[in-house]
Length: 273
View 1 (cartoon, rainbow, N blue to C red):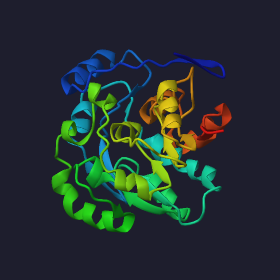
View 2: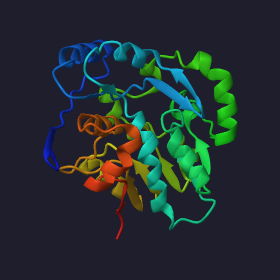
View 3: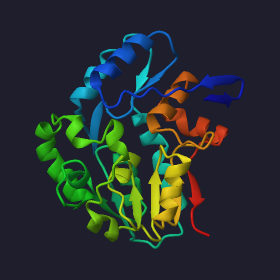
């Protein structure tokens, strides 16, 4: 799709590789030096937990494939733009519970929710390790610092739905969804485990299509906060938006200013009349 950005026009293109790391590596090598910026989806360079970062082996491998073109994984957008979404949650009672499906992927959003006065449940053990457990943010930080030197080496294919698996829903961990008023984080984790009912809840995510937003409406979601703008009905992932900002010559610390100028800040959408 083409994005009109003032005097610049950005061509934003998505290339899927069905979860295959080797295909992703080949795409990156082929595009290196031929485009202004590259965004990597489905793998982070690092897992973020507090002030500590733990390298993700697959993300680091893909990062090494690129020599010329800036390659981003969405972490800049997640750090500087996504936390602004909490400003749109003032209509919820203080102390409401927020389920962040993966704190390691969205630490800055989880932290912002906690600072706002919400009770954060870290869903990483459930959605990543397939264990029916949820932890407070402080408890998860402690456990994470003890276990991440080992767990960071688990294959992404086990931790995260890729390719056609992103469209399958397993209806797991309904007890965590039930406890929370806010469901926040990676859309594919949410979609992969979506309950039959999320009546009255608020979802904070990116990367949704019109049909997926209709799905949220059918399961009763009250409102959706998109942390990336909607272009032609599609809300890109954080890595795509960071690639756009990088192509425009911006650095992460300046993202909020430029995103504000273009109207790309998080937006609240009411799904129920």
